[in-house]
Image (cartoon, rainbow, N blue to C red; front, side):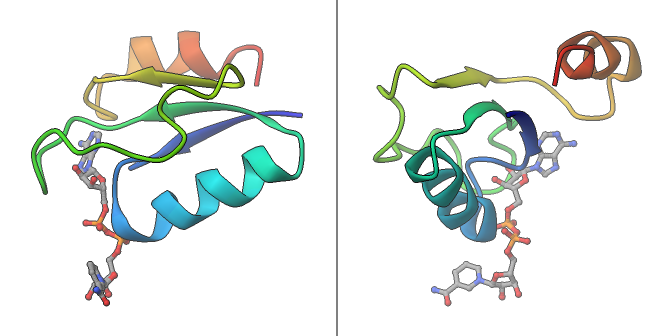
Length: 69
Ligand SMILES: NC(=O)c1ccc[n+]([C@@H]2O[C@H](COP(=O)([O-])OP(=O)(O)OC[C@H]3O[C@@H](n4cnc5c(N)ncnc54)[C@H](O)[C@@H]3O)[C@@H](O)[C@H]2O)c1
């Protein structure tokens, strides 16, 4: 599946994204880096991971990103 994860650079979703990728899913991660600043994650370079530094309150953009998830 292709799964949209908000807060993907955060504490809980850091583990969630890793798990989803290990299970063979494609992940679209959303984070505005407001909590910890720009953090590096082990899965940043994973070809099945697509990251967007955006605000999850942007409804138009969220609808667009979620459309094929
Ligand atoms: N070492 C530890 O045990 C540890 C460390 C950190 C957190 N925690 C705990 O984990 C829990 C919190 O974890 P979490 O993952 O729910 O929260 P989090 O704050 O770690 O992650 C939320 C993520 O969402 C992002 N975000 C916030 N608003 C956004 C917006 N409008 N658009 C896009 N991105 C946005 C933030 O930048 C952040 O990366 C708390 O209970 C905390 O105490 C524990």
